Amino acid sequence: MAGMPAAYPFSAVVGLADLRLALLLTAVNPAIGGVLVRGEKGTAKSTVVRALATLLPELDVVRGCRFGCDPAAPDPECPDGPHVGAAPVVRRRASLVELPVGATEDRVVGTLDIQRALAEGVKAYEPGLLATAHRGLLYVDEVNLLPDHLVDLLLDAAAMGRAHVERDGVSVKHAARFLLVGTMNPEEGEPRPQLVDRFGLVVSVTSPDEPGPRAEVVRRRLAYDADPDGFAARWAAEDAALAERIAAARERLASVELPDGELDRIARICLAYGVDGLRADIVVARAALTLAAWQGRGAVTVEDVRDAARLALPHRRRRDPLDPPGTDEERLEETLSNEDPSPEPDPDPEPPNGGPSGEGAPSDEDGGSAEQPAAAPGQPYRPRVLTLPKTGERAHAGRRSLAYARRGRVVGARLPQGAGAPHLPATLRAAAARGSRTVAPADLREAVHVGREANLVLFVVDASGSMAARQRMSTVKAAVLSLLRDAYQRRDRVGMITFRGTAADEVLPPTSSHEVGVQRLARLRTGGRTPLAAGLEAAVRTLRTERRRDPRRRPLLVLVTDGRNTAGADPLTVVPSLSGTAAVVVDCEGGPVRLGLARRLAVALDAPCVPLAQLSATNALGRVA
Image 1: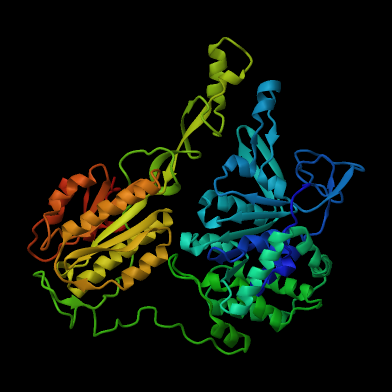
Image 2: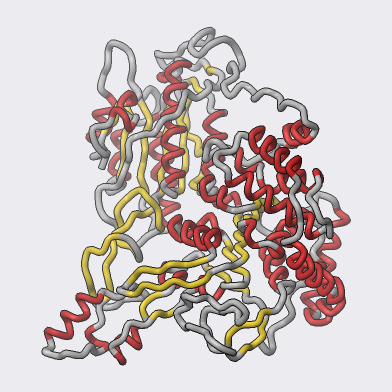
């Protein structure tokens, strides 16, 4: 576009060698499956991705085709086709399409052209972003915040190279081959491991940790800001060389050979990493072939396999959605050296500070001041589904509670209030009510959808001596860990407050980073008296603050306690301040004599009370609502 400043040059990026290599490889061979870039804010993730688009070769497209068909091999199912004979050709740059987090499904896959439907009475398809991105680059910033069904849709299209749309009475198929790049900040929450696995390569980036590179980053950025076109011109030769190298590697790729020995090596590496399925093997093979083409070699070498495995495998070893991603360079090197991989470390080592749970730890059942070492959590499980009792207004997409949403089950129709999908039967009924056989704009109705929303789940956990028996605290930690994982899977924000001694502590301010919650839970120590009222007061303060920050996200209070209160005010005096807040009490009381204090507290909170032993979904008779 005229007047737009030049993009930051790809060659001018300082450091980030793995990221630049991964992006260049997928530019050569989009079949690798795209790149997911993980990194904290301010690490140039978006800058590098946008710079890559300037290196992609120019394209010949059929003039007037909204789906970017290649004149040499037009899509036989193109909705704007068929393109037969010598179709007029136009040459243009590969497109860079940025998908915003708030995009609707209609915007991504396309929808019915309402204007033509009303004016001409025909079913016409309006292309979406997948059509625009065909043969170009599709960039999704904050991909971890994108609704899961849109991520699935994008990754399926990237893998199949086609988009198939069935909606609003329109059935359309069109080519959708693009280079997919997603960026994310881990502090804002992790995507599901199943989705991460669908990306071919995953790269983690950090800021330079030496003063020299940091200063050079600032120097170049200031120079670019002062004169974007002049700065880009100084790096034009390097970028042009990279663009030529991408084009040459694309031509060379089909002739590169993968020797059987290297293919066997890939299989051994994937087995050593313990990956599921065969997608990892295929991605490593494609990446190794592309690396050989990039380096100008005719056959894959062990170095190509090593670099491909380093980019394609570490994130696929995650067995738990809350496990941090990591690398295993030693295992990779052992396998590359044809040595047997070392045995897996013990996944459940003996907890420190003594023997088995429950032995050798001081007891404080009477609310004394003794402090216990941190107990290891027990084995997590799938918990009962905890939901809010009422249907909320439009809120954050998730999987926990019912809410009116932009997508989901259609429950009615109304006059248009935004960018909602049209409700064709209601529109036709409105026209018929006027006695008209034609539809006017005033007849238009939009569908009302009920979907699922994400919530703020605030855990308030008793860490006092009244629950200090190590075996019992291990069980409680297993329950909270299970609920944390459930909150992760349902796209909730989570927070955690613990109370012990004389005060409460907000150990985890509300966040989307569920991994932090797991880490804080593992370090949680117990002992001291039971200031239950202080825990509830801390919950009131946190909920008020979060309500001001984000009034659309409804809270769910999960109180994990045996109901005892041995310090501070009467907890019932705090209950009125929680009026209107949905809550669930997890009763952790044990022993042969039970006082039922947690159940009394649940009645005061107008909340269901779930005994700890019945929290598991296998023991549940129904949902807690």
